[in-house]
Length: 473
Image 1 (cartoon, rainbow, N blue to C red):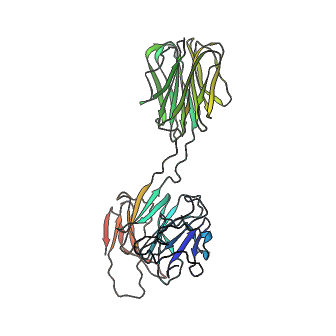
Image 2 (spheres, helix red, strand yellow):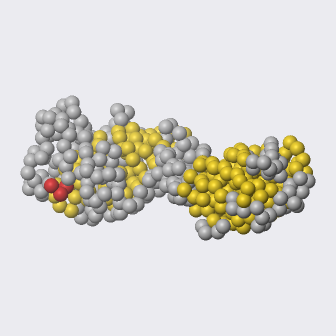
Image 3 (cartoon, rainbow, N blue to C red):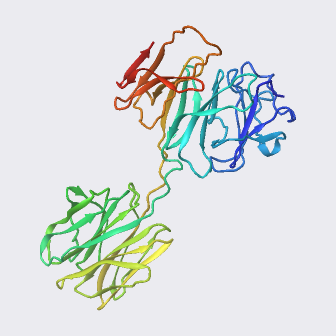
């Protein structure tokens, strides 16, 4: 049973619906638990995206919501409630009248609305409506705050602050897609303790730079590899058994965008060095490489099986003794660099689309010792949704005011501020008001106005442009 003046609203993906208490069978017992048990709402849909939504009671003329049926939570579906009707003239639909979506103080009701289409998680509004007992049953909502991000968590505390969560990443950022940028290759060095070449990193997100180095010494592994001033991390090294050739793989996440020099420095002089690099975006910044695999042998068919995954990219580095011609075996593999350093070593590298198991393989023109190193380049993980807690200060009677806070922090010029309305049922000779407001940004202004029914708006006072607390009498 519903008290006079109570509303039940529910929303589906197509529109907002209102339960008509005069034709509905009794579903809610509002009398039993009014004193100490706040009403809570429950729904039968997941997130914003479903078409079936639960129902919520609005009792704006008292303290808000109440539990029902002796405090026992009951899940209601609009499809099982007789007597509901579609609300006309609704351009925006509430994001489910749930515990986070609607709250009320006194005769003022606040809700989170969004444009039609539950697949759209942006462009949400905080709406406000004023309830007048005996007036029309449909509440007239107006925009209080418009945001380009998703809004969650509407709640009013004992200090009359309307808290909400601004969520710029909802849904959370999906797993990254590893995307190739560019490859670069050094000029082979036939004698020396370093090798260097130019590489350009394009702008992007979740960047990674992977370097492969082949040398003719059994311990031919650099002591450092740098891109400009940034140091690479050595992921894996491997040497061919019985021959003085070795391969190593290095990785740098978040490289500086632009052109810089990659330099690999060795402790000892080498008689043959070759190297190359590949740039990528959409890479896991904490664990860019995984599934490291090494293999060695004496043949014309170097190969190694790399444990990988769909969405990964398999990279390999080859070092072959002498100067055989190395040919990438093709298929889904793409050669990224390939050359010989005199007669000492052949160095090459390739990339291939990831799968559960990927075979990295080459063909040599002549049989000889070789070392092959492979690894799986991993996509960026699903990102956490970074949410910011904000509040809107309300007046004692629950009406909105212009004070806006974000953990007492900075405000944004994208907020729209509306002061609470004061209505007069008849003409009065004089009335004194004090309006309090805060402006957090000196680059924007707040202006008080008075609106006359059937007429325009008169400006009162000067615009507030300073970053301060203000009182206007």
